[in-house]
Image 1 (spheres, rainbow, N blue to C red):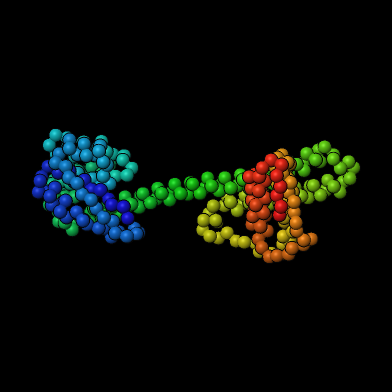
Image 2 (cartoon, rainbow, N blue to C red):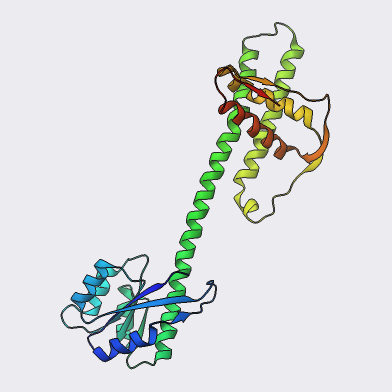
Length: 289
């Protein structure tokens, strides 16, 4: 676990020494946090020194005396307000509801009333540390969730490219009337296009239903499938991309290869396999399946 940096700012030497002594070498055991959290403690005697320390190395937790010579604690609090990765605990000998409300409005996380015991100090620091670390973890998880969504969209775009190209190819063949008046040939092209559209719809539902996927409730539809038929469909799916680069896709399969699997997942695997084989092949190359 990372070490949390603590800066105590107080014009009383005894207070600085006491806080440093109480927290130096301490390790916090926090709920919901893996492992003990070690602390590293530094001290500043006035506001000017505190601002220099803050500029040089931002602490994780700032213990800030309310009344300081020169720049006051509240003025420093205003300067650091809005820092997303630091929490401030105000220290005061004049604890009052008005002061607490004022400090909270300016961004303080909590406050300690002098005199306080080492146990009270550690309890307040422990509460602030837990809040800070959970806040960081929440941001990390949010960033990870955004990254996963981008990856899913990238996968979606990749998986849709090949079947869309196949459908586009079939539609152009129909438009050009390549089979003349042989309607059965056009029917087969339409049937192939519908199969690919069904696969695309299933893929979209699976990838974009994030709640179902993240909760682990995505169910597989296990049923008998013909691997030879699936391989033929995948070869036809990548045919337009292969033709653009003059890549030959050759199938070496039996008439029928029965198996039990999720048809949608098997289609994704075969489409990925062949589309990548074409994509990373040389112009005029060959793919054997």
